[in-house]
Amino acid sequence: MAEDIKDTKIENPETAEAVATEAPAAPAKRKTKKRVVSHGQLHIHATFNNTIITVTDANGAVLAASSAGANGFRGSKKGTAYASQVASEKAIEKARANYGLTSVDVFVKGIGLGRDSAVRAALSFGIVINSITDQTPLAHGGVRRKGERKV
Image 1: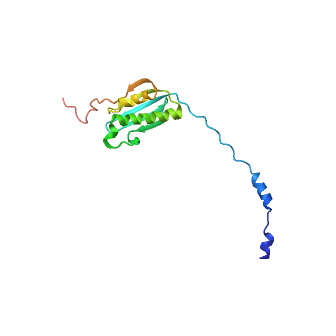
Image 2: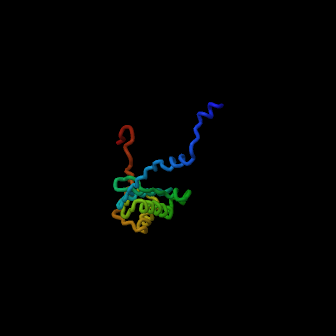
Image 3: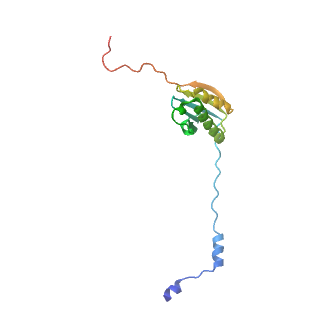
């Protein structure tokens, strides 16, 4: 017991505080430069059941995305033109606020009701539309069946 008392060191509280205040400060975080994308692409995938809106840069890297289902529409309401308009507004608003998007090339795919309303929503936000391209796949009868050709 006497040995424990000899080994314990009593610190002066004033010197302990002085040592604590002289500790080095944490290094300051670097401020990252905000990425600015003034021209991008607006991809609209309109089906009968849903509409998916994706805003990308010129290389195809996604900046923002939204869909009718992600905006609270359920069931058959997801396929409506109004749901497509709301989804388009959300995606464009995100891209404009975060990246400064001002103009887009529009690529439309599908035969759903939301094709036109999604494009009109982009216009209502003041986004300049340079071109509109329809990428809807066309059925061509498919490939030839297996087996001998019947004459």
